[in-house]
Image 1: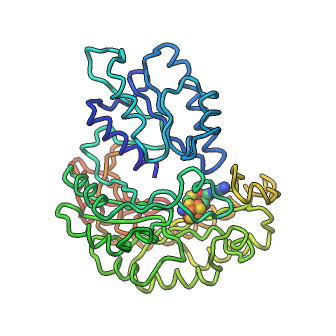
Image 2: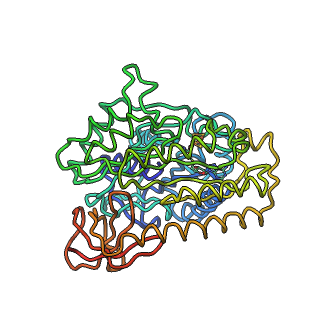
Image 3: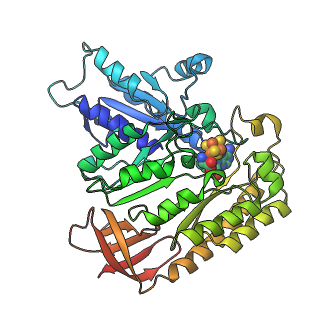
Length: 428
Ligand code: SAH
Ligand code: SF4
């Protein structure tokens, strides 16, 4: 979602006549887009914003924009405290909102910008959020379709920082996708914290399948994906739409978080482990060749060894294609942080994390090994250290050595090597 937000800010800055640079030292505007979903992410955001102090001292006219979940949507005392804490920041802006920065840059025309004679430049300070240096070459782009979240899982800070759930109108989304595709984008991933709830808050009540159908036939668009789904809103209509629409890729991201019913209740996830298992079977039955990814939190307050074991066993049974693992981290304001003791010791969280990591490495390795000597369609995105990087329909990472320019092309590739996290192949 932050990648999508950063792209939005980039396009607004480009419209204002700025060009991108990857060097903060050379930029007139520096944007730091922040994530605070876990304490470690917040710590690194704080480190980065603090590291800009020296640069600002040297170049006081440089504009620093702190945006995203560290700023949040609430304003008030919290925002005042941020302003006091980071006096070198010029503009604070909420997630997904390029407005305050654009207003700051345009309303103050008298600003004495640096290097006036040269073009104005902007940079992002997020090494973890890669933005292609040349966006004209963007092959795959994210488009947020549901902003915020109103679900309030007890561990999660997202609703407090991204605000309540809001779906963007169909026409807005279509317009953004059309514009991206006209710039050469081949693959669009629609984003929402609960993307399968798309449209429930809109007057016409369009569904995610409606939206997929609306975008599907745009000429030039090759692939469509969406994430993240919540188990409770994965309707058969949605799964059937994925299966029926050729450009919608067989790829579902549907987090389980835990496979223990008591923990799931304490998390307020709203489903049981059995219901999740049935859902995975339903997805696999309806979408041939589907790749399924899940998210898991280990060490939620009160998680016993036995409860963790349930998660371990279900993952072993279900054999997901990808598992994003996280160690529980108490977040301010959340119900879990206020009412539940973070009582699983850090070493124990790490132990559970590593056990799952090892399990998943084996599963992913076995799944990928089945692709050896098979031919798959790969959409190529960019060349990294001499190899072209692309993805299969079910989202497996494939590298191919080639002197040709493969960017933006969908080509059949024969797999010659497989590992748990990626595969290699050659052009067929
Ligand atoms: N909307 C998505 C996920 C949003 S946050 C969903 O409903 O699943 C992305 C992931 O971060 C979550 O899936 C969860 O695994 C992890 N996460 C969120 N809050 C966390 C916390 N307090 N501690 C550890 N991991 C957390
Ligand atoms: Fe957070 Fe739950 Fe909303 Fe996902 S659904 S963003 S985990 S509150």
